[in-house]
Length: 380
Image (cartoon, rainbow, N blue to C red; front, top):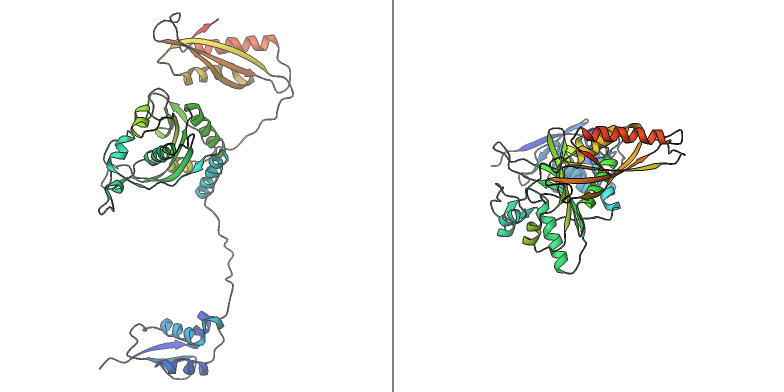
């Protein structure tokens, strides 16, 4: 015969869990009709559990039966009291701000499939080991992505095949590059693709993100990630490790995806970007005094990055600098092989006075002296 089972049930616990005001006498009429026998006196009663109810073993199981037969609609409603209020984490807030910036720029969020065909990564210029799915539904979805780029390029190709050009998309999602240990790496990434746009458009998106999140990165043109245009792309470097890339997709990659438009691209490691302590925002009052523009053109070797020359000019100009813009690049026989001319427009302004000819001449001398240290030669 089955072993007899029972549970000790406290009336006070029944009322605490259910928010009711039942008495000990109310328990038996609720449980007896379903085979649960109540005995004993006082707050704690012994409830014999019928043999056909192996699912009931403890006090809370009996309380559940009381609730069912008392009626869920009669159970009291009590709003929980807590001094702790829910809130988004700092990383969640920064991710939400990132989405707001991108949507505000007119870029639509895409959600491609995280599973890809083995050859799709190779088409995007991303070679290397991948993680294969044990039981894929189809071979076209048999490996985990190591980058968000292939899925977005497929989306651009699909739109172009349906005569939708100039598509601008972004995706925030996880990627799974091969790791150095037994387990693969995983991190959250951002990829922005701008069909019909050139590299400066991707740089503009990066500047908006950097301003909104209070982050920065150094542009390293000597390291171009695979699958990006060799001379129109660069790595975004924060410290020793790269934090992303900016530029254009390699034309050979676009050809493999049957995309005829140029595609500007921005890729970021969001674990690094969103986890970084933002720089405190600072503002300067707008000067009521007029600004003055100074154009400077320098000839220098091709192997000297324009970024280095711009940095030198900034240091040479000093506190009067408001803005600097590269507006012309020239190559020709007059410069010789392996050299080009970079022309910058430097905007100057003082916060408390009008600029004099002496101020501008001083700035010019400082900028030329700083550029000369890089081997640059002033033209014109």
